[in-house]
Each structure stands twice: as C-alpha cells, then as structure tokens.
Amino acid sequence: MMRYQRFNFCPQCGGRLSYKRVGERERLVCEKCSRIMYENPIVGVAAILFENGEILLGRRAATASFPGLWCIPCGYVEYDEDIRAAVKREFLEETGLSIEPGDVYAVLSNFHNPAVQTVGVWFEAQAVGGSLCPGDDLDQVAYFALDALPQLAFPTDKQVVNMLLADSTMKLRM
Image (cartoon, rainbow, N blue to C red; front, side):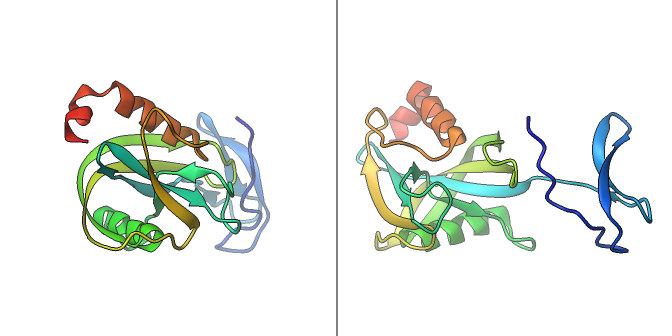
C-alpha cells in the first residue's frame, strides 16, 4: 500500500514529523519532542435502503470526490456524534429522506484513497419520512436493481453489493 504523509508538523510543539520504526510499525514521530502521531482511520457510515427490490444510490456531484460515479449514500461520523445519529443525519443530508437504521450489515476498511482511509459501517435502513431529493455531495438519487447498477465510486460499495446479491436472507427483506 502506498504511504501518504498527511501530517508534517507536530500538534504539540510544531516540530517536523518523520516516519520511524516504533515497535512493529512505521509511525510519524516528532523529531523535536518525540511525540508519536498516530494515524487512525476516519469512521464513515452508509445506509442500505431498498424500495420494491431496488437499492437507493446517489451520484457524486462535481464538487465531491469521484464525481459522476454512484454510491450507497454515506458520510463521516462527527467527533462527538453517535454512529446511528450520524447515519440518520448523513442520509437526510444526501437524499432528503429520514431513516431508521436497523442492523449493521457490513463493516469494511476503505483503502481507495491513501489520504483519507476510513472504516465504513453499512446499516440496513427503513425510510420513515422526507422527500427524495439529492443534496450535499450528491447531484442525483435513484433506485436500481442490484444486477443493473451504474458505475460505483467506491470498491467497498461493490463488496457490499456482492454481499447483498449472495445474501438470501437480505433478499427476503428487499
């Protein structure tokens, strides 16, 4: 995996950060105060919503990453936010629909963007209100059959779709 150095200066003293072996890993270490800068992934959330056997997807807007490609509506969890509150907020912002998240369907690591690695959590969801309308990072929202999807932006969404296609218990709930 290609290394991308996101941080160059220590948040504690302002010294330069460089990679050094710490235990079994290479970590960013301050050359001045020796503080270790741990690089942890960001948590992302997505909601899987079906209507009449089709999954809701959003097309990434021109101002978003991977413009013109489609994704399961998703976003980041804020620092002080409950993960279920985050998926409700993100889904509403991106689709105009209020949802009630159900079970966690999948948890996957995302490595497609070396600058922003995430751990994604996909929830099963039911719509409980609102009006379907793209917003935030999306310029279009539409329902698609799982076997007739447009080009997806994220490799992990492709993994989730493949899991859905193979999951006979999920097919009963669609």
